[in-house]
Length: 382
Image (cartoon, rainbow, N blue to C red; front, side, top):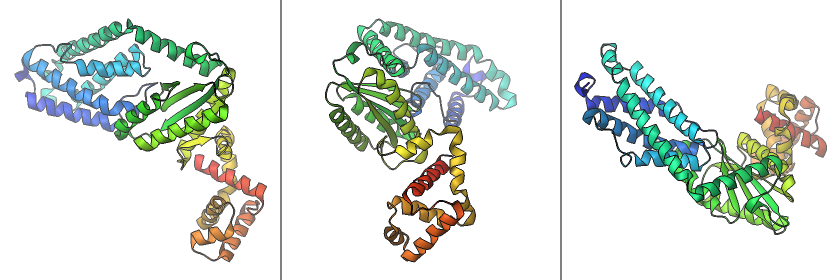
């Protein structure tokens, strides 16, 4: 079948480009262990190359060679290096191809649909060729000793996080571990910056970075004192984030022994998730400075009940909740609250008394102010 029997080549390219635009608006592909922020930019570059190669194949009848499609296979190898399995990489390619093809057919004018459907064998042949190239390259690289070493290290880190059993480079005398769980902001446009941040973190000595769909987990180990290890590692993370300007959060926790790592990992995950949901102002969240936020975030099904403690404020007048938030943010200083709100201190006192009357909790009493603080956090998380 010749290309003249279907829409002209330029029209075919334009229509395929429209379909890619639709797919981009749908959010693009997702991997279980690779953040979307690291996938989107390169992925759509790969789609554009695929479209160009496919249209050329339709025009000339010559299947693209491994050299022609090298950038496509390199993107697939990057996904494998970041922790995705070969079945997931190939499955994602096949699924995306099927989604794009179905959309292309559905957008075609009915008068041309039969001609377009006749392209299906060529589409299948092209996809099979790309999948074969990806699988062949993956098999070639799997024999590389460096690949085997990376897999052993990845397995060792997974075992440490899950069971607290240290092996390989993680099995050191008097170890101290720091676990940092990153939660990215969900902005695919920052993929270049995210890659730069990842590279900076991986350049830190004695660090293993494992990616997942929300960001990544970083394990750092040392035989120095826990305080020294945490302080230096946190400073390095801060420097890396400031240099890359990536919008993200890192929950961080430490463990004095390998057996304590799973608990530290759980705490770091909770801190990162809570910081993300609250749009936390600081990049790094730790248990010492985010105790209330962490505990409220971990309350699960009890969250609505805690949030209900401050529900009467919004029902009465939003100014009462606003005043309470600023008052708590200003360390319960009424004068500082009045200055920030540009009102007389008596106005703040009156509003806080209304908070007391509406909620039954006195914000001028430390313990009850802490309860109100927790309730506001629960409201933000609900």
